[in-house]
Image 1 (cartoon, helix red, strand yellow):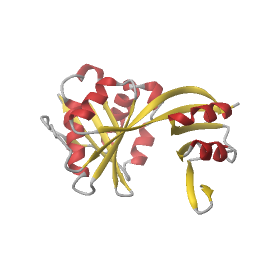
Image 2 (spheres, rainbow, N blue to C red):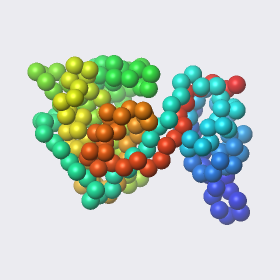
Image 3 (tube, rainbow, N blue to C red):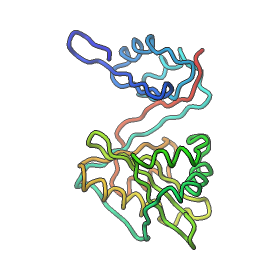
Image 4 (cartoon, helix red, strand yellow):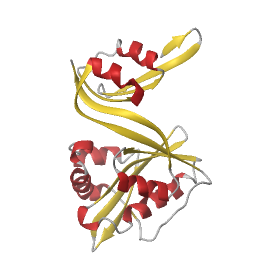
Length: 214
């Protein structure tokens, strides 16, 4: 944490020796970056802190990421397709859908990674003719429901599958907590329309990079 007296001006979270999140003031981020000793990072910070991030790290991929928030009572749910719970037997199909949907953003997601994460996340999907067409992953942490992954096979887009899955997931989240969040690439207008349709509102824009130390 970066402190001014007893006041917290900013925080840096580092996990898996690779993923870094910054919160707080620009000056706090500048100071905290001096203590970050990683050669390669996946880094998320408020977009107005971009200058300091780029002084230390050369991006191999970067984008603006919008955080959207939905509070209980603001939801507008549209579940019009049958939803199924997914388990390890679906991991290969899940990986195929995610890796095809946006390989730049998601990278190469492996079956093993998906199975390993199933103990702490909840996967649901929609099947067409016995095959997965669309998937959604959620996680509950510190009183907030996080919709982590939404992806639809290219052959099954524009049929309302993502809307149904997100609606179903919001309904499940709001039975346990009063707030849900989702991150989306700032220029992914089809996804943003879906999320706004069910009640999400833009909250803040972050700068996200995968990069290497200069």
